[in-house]
Length: 275
Image (tube, rainbow, N blue to C red; front, side, top):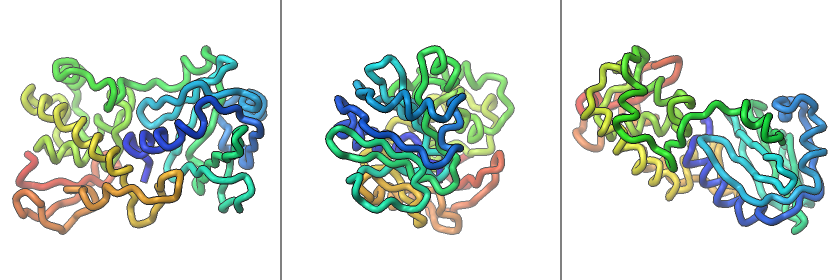
């Protein structure tokens, strides 16, 4: 699974007391692809070493560490990346492609088997052309009217539109399915075909679903591709109503959950509750 907003927010909350106010005394990159968003891979090492993290923010699925040298430490976990916080003396797991040690002797590691994640350290000008993200789905959720305007005339399925980070930053495959189920909207419906009441229901569903995901520490599926920085699993798996439950019965009406492919992604829904 791709870590989504609740997983990244959970990681941010774990990392915040570890890195805020701390100086990075040693930085190591062990795979060139991990630093591909910098023109020169060595820039990540040179710009981060010696810098103090003044604040750790999140937008969508990105982590942003604001540094005292005016630059920003950006992390995205990609498909399989996870963050670990441990002692620099601890054995490193396979696929540890990045490590940064603080002046309190904590080591932050990016472990990323598929190398779709990345770490970058960028100037303000570089950051401005970097993300292209829409408003954050958790902290900056647009009003229903604004969301309706964004969906007007769109023929793409609403599931695909919810995954478009330019429209709304943070939702991924799991939580988009859960939001659509709570709102009673099928994932295959064209975005522009939703009426205002349906869009308002959709908007009202987003914050509770994401809040519950954050409170549970995110969703760790059976492969445990995502885990918290302390190694514990996120606990939202047992609360999922539709995602990954093809063939099971809807917890609301008892109808068998179906799976359909939308935009190349598996999508799960209840044929009765979602119209």
